[in-house]
Length: 67
Image 1 (cartoon, rainbow, N blue to C red):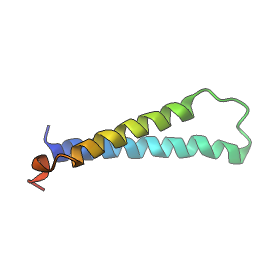
Image 2: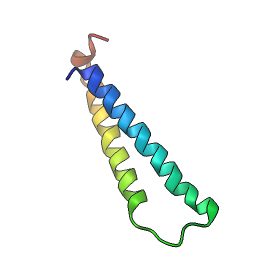
Image 3: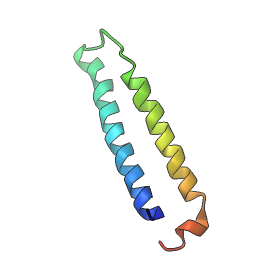
Image 4: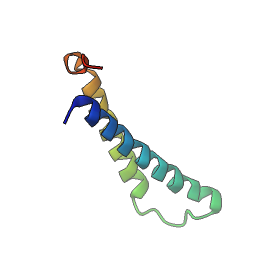
């Protein structure tokens, strides 16, 4: 898989997860905060992992010469 394609894939996954995280956080606005099932923390952790992977891709300038 090309670096650009991998970068785009990781960004897309991260965007979806950030949307889900926003929905979970919005539950508080509707009073649906009676339980915490760990989903919020799992989403935050996965988003952080994806961000690290994206940063690692960007830190390899020789791989991005084709952009």
